Length: 221
Image 1 (tube, rainbow, N blue to C red):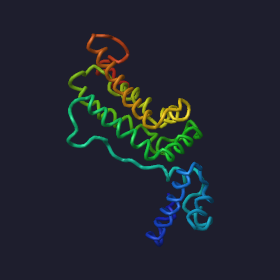
Image 2 (cartoon, one colour):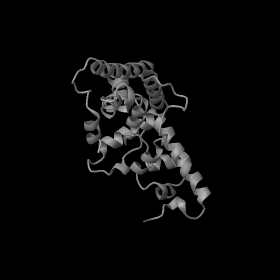
Image 3 (spheres, rainbow, N blue to C red):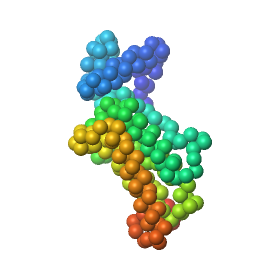
């Protein structure tokens, strides 16, 4: 396995160079550009030849510029037990991430649309690997005891569909709503889906939400 260029020799100096290239790329993204390696090198005052040692092409540069959020949960240790409150906290934090990192996440979306269908999972852009689904499932955890027959994974996927960068871009660019309104709509939509799932279960419905625990486990294997 090849050793990354920045992992040999003057590691600290190389890390500073890499950070400078990424800072330049993120700045260009925030200004509405999708930077090339050469543009980022010029903006950072680094030679293009040197820049290509760190990022051999634009895709590698943009992937590195996307924020890495490795938090297993968006909830604090003192999070409430009420599932509605937990979900609202998670979606509020999720929309906060969208607002803080919008240019980078838009770049990630473009990369995702351009990638080949057979692209390995670990090569996909960060935040496009199902992490948000896990955060939402964590918010829905109390349902395991209160409503064990609800397929929490399926519900989390439905909620995630309406609160990711894809929905954000549609609302802001196509529906032309403000970012504040987009965040509000995402939180309201998430609560509506949760309420619908609870209502169907409470009425003894055999609809799509009410999937027995055994089936749910089989579907996630």
